[in-house]
Image 1 (cartoon, rainbow, N blue to C red):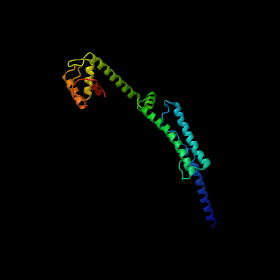
Image 2: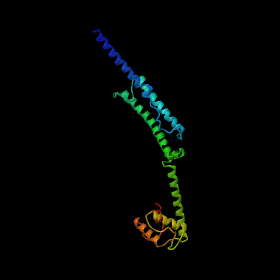
Image 3: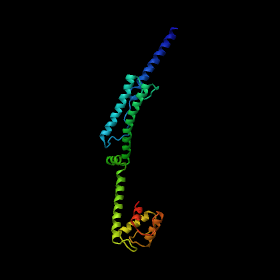
Image 4: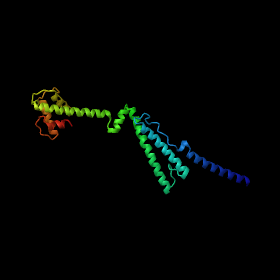
Amino acid sequence: MKQIIIFILVIIALMIAFGQYKQYKRFSLTEYQYTANKNIDLNYHDRSFLLDYYQAIENLNGYVIMQWSLESIDVRNPDNDDEAIVAATAIYNEKLGEVKFYEDQLVKSANLKQKGMTNADIKFLETKGISLEDHTVQANEKDMKDLLRAMFDSERSKNGLRLGSSSAFISEIQKLLVSKGHDIPVDGVFENETTNALRVFEVKNGLFPDGKLDALTLEVLLR
């Protein structure tokens, strides 16, 4: 009988010890602590943003251990819908969301650098919503369109858009027509091939099909 009692006491002691170990394990540093993602950009262009990320992690970890130590609430794994637990868990989720916000941007920056982008490129992308390379391409395209509009005004003023006329501007118009699928020579001469291509283009785009280059046809070509 005595041996049975001792055995039962040993079992109880082991269960208590295991429970205490689980509680310790549950909130040992290696278990509860949120650690920084290893894939973040440690050379991110905004150093204060990187520091904010680490501070957000510290705040998160501090809140988790404080809730457990003072309130016995595990905000990471709430075990019921008690009002206090729900409120504490909501705050935890907000703090975790803040960490993830910083982390996602830092990981994205690291991935972009692997593709060859620099800090300057990434900063421009985040500010403008477009890469520096694409912005340069768009700016160059805009400059070219503005130049062609100016050349059009010049050619029209000197009556340089007649059949048989030749110029660098007509060559650029022919390039635009070719880019739209028209098979014509790019020789800078306003011949029948160019006129016919303009007429077909005008028909396809709902313009008056006279085969002449006017301001409206030019704008549709520049789209």
